[in-house]
Length: 256
Ligand SMILES: Nc1nc2c(c(=O)[nH]1)N[C@H]1C(S)=C(S)[C@@H](COP(=O)(O)O)O[C@H]1N2
Ligand SMILES: [Mo]
Image (cartoon, rainbow, N blue to C red; front, top):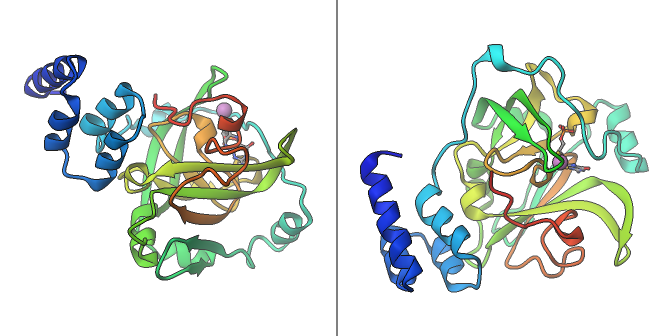
C-alpha cells in the first residue's frame, strides 16, 4: 500500500470506528456489489477489505519457488459413477455447465474452455489445517465466461457444484460445494484451472477443472467443478452457510 493509501485507509478505519463507515465506504467504491455488502449485516472487517482491497492481487512467485511436491487434500479421487465414466474417457465428454441466474446458459467442453481468455499464475495455497504449497496454475478467467453467460441483475453469488462427496453427513447432504461473491468472481486472478505445473490438472488436484481463488484459503477452491450456478442467495444449498466446510463451522469469507 502506498503511504497515501495507507493514510486514507487509516482515516476511513477511524471513521468506521466512529460509525460513519457506510457513507465513507460508499463514496469510495461505486460498485453495487459492494453496496449490497455494506447494506447487509456482514462484519466491519469484510466491509473494509472489500472497499480497499477489492482489486489487490495475491502475491505471485518465480518458477524457482514452486513446491517440489504439492499436497493433495480432501477428496482426491471422486467415486461417483458419473465422474468415473468421465475420467475413463479422459474428460472428452465433460461439459462445464454455467446456469442459474444467467441470460445465456453455457455448456463448455475443455477444448472450448482452452479457447477462452486464460491466465497463468504461480501462487501459494494455504490450507486452514496449517500447510502451504506453491504451485503454477493455468486456466480460463472466470470473468469473461460470466460476461458470455450474462448474469441477471439479481445474481449475487456463484455456487460451484462438485463431483465429489465427503463422508460426513449433515442434513443429508455430503456433496462438496462452495460459493463466492461477484467481486471475487471477477478478480483478475480468479481462474478455472485445467493445468497445474504445466501438466494437465491431475485427478488428485481436481480434474478436469478446479477453482483458483488466490486471496482465500484452500477450502474455497472447489475441485471437480461440474456446474456453476448464479444465485441470489445460498440459503437453499446444503445447510445454507455457503459451502461444505462453512456448513461445518468455517468462515464463509476465508481471506488470507
Ligand atoms: N470438490 C472438492 N474441492 C475441494 C476439496 C474437496 O474435498 N472437494 N478440499 C478443499 C481443501 S480443504 C483444500 S486445502 C483444497 C486442496 O486442494 P489440493 O488437493 O489441490 O491441494 O481443495 C479444496 N477444494
Ligand atoms: Mo484445506
